Image (cartoon, rainbow, N blue to C red):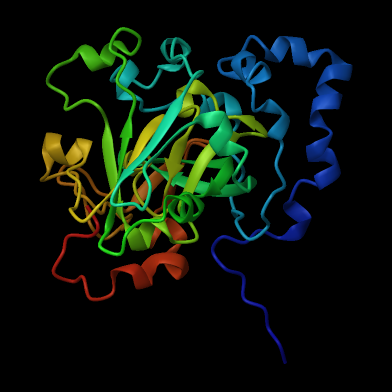
Length: 317
């Protein structure tokens, strides 16, 4: 007798939004007069005039789904850590000052040919899709997000890294006149993150260009951010301008600030506490309920093999 076992990222088909409803939501909004009202919300107005707006909504990849309710867009766009615009969560209004066109992306380091391209050229070379992912912050809150973007592995393929490249270093913008948080000299600006090449080419690693069926809001890291759903959220760098392939493990923003609390790997593990709090549970911002945290945020079947033989390293914080 064949018994199908549901995996951690699967959701019953009956609970998924029908594709016809999802694809027609713009027409529904327009017909009801809600489209004009929506333009006053953070990130919505900029999305409507975004040069890449015609690429959305992208087809949903049914392999990547979640068992929890999707967090409302109004929460996701207004409850974010984006230290470039402030140390509090309510940075949505300040982030609207970020100019995201023109936006150049540089690919350099240990590659066959260094590339500098504008974002709109890059995105139209990539296979966009939507994925439903969980997001777990190191501060013990969590969201679920319908991201649109492309696998980080596609950018790696385009870059053609040399064989000795073992890490990918990523860097965000530096605009202190716009992002006033960057004037705080005690922070090691610009924001830097990094992953191993094995992590960069893992199926889950995703470069985000959109969310909720349109270009991603500035408060969420427009125009290009990373999402690594098995790691704590600070690893998912926002507003990326540079990818550097290297044979040295990058020193990341939070490592530079507090290496004893924020390590390079930062994989989610409920059994390994942050030095100042437990990681055993998290607050779901959709329901405001406390729920148990899972190893690798529930994505162990995708990523556990990446860390075999690394028992001597602190891979969980």
